[in-house]
Structures are given as C-alpha cells and as structure tokens.
Length: 453
Image (cartoon, rainbow, N blue to C red; front, side, top):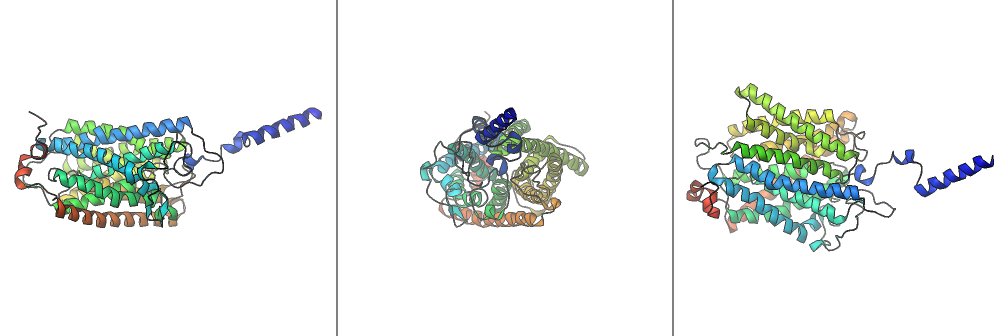
C-alpha cells in the first residue's frame, strides 16, 4: 500500500510540474496552430522562443522573397515583348526595395500596430519602435516579433508588384514609384489590418489564411482600375504581342511555386500540423489548377499550351491561398480545379470586354482571390485547423456570409482607393509614357538599357 501511495504521489507531482499528462496536452493546439495570421488570445504563461518555429518563419520569409525576385520578375519579364523585359523586371525589383523601407518606417505600424477603431493600426511602432526580439503574444508567441514583421514585409512587397502586370509596357517609371508608395500605405495597410491586425473583419470572424483577400483580391481589383484608366496599349488587338520568352516565364513559374510553400505554409507561424496541411493544400491546388487550365484550353482551342499550364498553376496557387490552412487535400483539389477553369474563362471574357490587362492579373489573381475566399467559406473545417471555423458544407452558413462580406468590402475598398490614387498620380507626375516612348520600349525610353544586344 505504501508503494502505491508513493507512486501516486510521484505521478501527481510530475503532472503538476509538467503542466499535466502528455495525452491531455496533445489535444490543445498551440497559438501558432490555433489561429495563424489572426489575433490570438494572450497567454498568461511566459512567452518563450521556439527555435524550430523561428527557423521555419525565417526560411518562409526567404521563400517569399524568392517569389518576388527572381520569381515574379522572371514570370512577368518573359510574358512581355523583348523591348520591355528590363522595364518590367525593374518594376518588381524596385517595388521590393521601396516597400521594404516603407514597411520598416511606417507600414508595419499601420497594418499591425495597436488597433484604432478596427480600421487601421496606430503609430506606436513607427521605425519599429517597440518591435523587438521578444515574442509578441498576438503575432507569434513562439517567434521573435521581428521575425513576424519580416515575414509580413514580404507580403507587403509582393502585392503591389503583382499589380504591375496589368499596366506592363506602358507606365512611366516615376508614376510607378509614386503609385506603389501611395497604394501600399492607403490600400494595402488598411486591408491587412482589417483581417490580420485586429481590425473589424478579423473581429467578426472572417478568415484569410495567407492573403486571398489581403493580397489577391486587393491587387486584382487594383489591376482592373489601372488597366481601365491607362487604356489599351497601342496596337492592342492588331499587333503581335505574344510573350517573347516562355522559358523565362516557366522558370518564374517554378520559383513562384517553390516560394509559395513559404507564402502559405509559413503563415502557420510555426513548424506544426497546420503548416503541413497548408503545404499539402498549396501543392494540390497548383497541380489541379494547371491540369484544369490545360484541359479547358485543349477543348476550347484544340491545343494545350505551356503558357496555359503555367497560368493555371499560378491561378491554383492564388486561389487555394486563403483556405490553405483551413481545408483538407480533397477540398484543395476541388479549389484548384475551379481556379483553372474560372480563371481561363475570365481571360476569355477579357477579350470580349476589351480592357487591356497586359499579363492577366485580374483573371488570375482577382478571380482567384474571390473564388478562394468564398471556397474557404464552403470548405473550411475545424478538423484541419481547430483555430479556424467550419464552413457552409460543415453546417455553418454564418461563416460563409462573413466570407462574402470580406470579398465585397476588400474589392470595393481597393477599387475606390486605387482609382483615387491613379488619378492623383496622373495629375502630379503622369501615368503613361508617350506614344514614341511606348513604340521604342520601356527598356530604352525609361532606363536607356537593352536586355538583348
């Protein structure tokens, strides 16, 4: 009896010291698993840095950087005519540099600083004041606060870079610089705060795991405005404007696909089960998107194309992004199939409507973002991510309604905000190059360089 009593005492003591038996702890998700990219509840326990989580978030930040340069730069660069390849690549590279500095100085504070009435972050963290190496209870309690800030910096940089595909081959370089700065501050930062920084949409319960609304809907709607305001390229519909270097575009596609694992799985903010689910959903969505685009194009045009497969893969990646950490692999497959089909249809309709979205930002990212956010409202499951929500197909119509609201709010805000910004930029520095400069090409007219001698 004494031995039994002593063993019981030892077990009770070990449980008290260790925080409970292991089987009980396994059923409770960590903060990083419970609510990635959203405001988590503050833990009463001291926050400690987990080296595995930190390593994954830093690696993911580098992966997203590879998406921007060289990924997006080469993807877009190969799609334009040879006289504009350097100018197009320059757009992506300089936006990365500008927005990185802007994010450190003020952007991060506006997007993720202390909430101001659900609309925007405060100015408390200007110049990263107060953003140190200790974990933040909301933005990754197992990683340094600055690691989260750097990860978000990459999202802030790639979003305006995506828009440049809409006005490729015809925008002034000075106009581009002013547009990128104003759009990042006045459109991107508020939307990021609404969903990820403690703003009104996040408080209502809307979910956007890795940027379907924050990145893709916002950039897609901005692309639509830019293409309409700048007008068609000279010779659009009559001149030969096919991509000048498809191998370059395929290389960019591969780098985008590779980096997107950091974009989506990194948004779990830790090396955990949600990151694995997001990783698998990302690959599944991309593969399904490429296959669907190929099949639809084959039926419609009689020939499958390399450009179509590349476009379908990117459409699948963009569309699965908002639900990557909330849906299972079969749901991701269905989302990818929808992405390839709907984005292809949107690009066919672009020709009928007549607007010149040079590199199909609206059809791929805008349509993909809307489809993905709504699909999250259908397929999200707490069985995949306990910190998420159950979607309409799991008996939760209210959550689907929130996703619809998210689409409408973000799309409308981006449309109105972008229109105001492009009009302002046009008034002060001008948007479009002259007819002579456009005929000469951006490489020579804007940068006095040639890609090919």
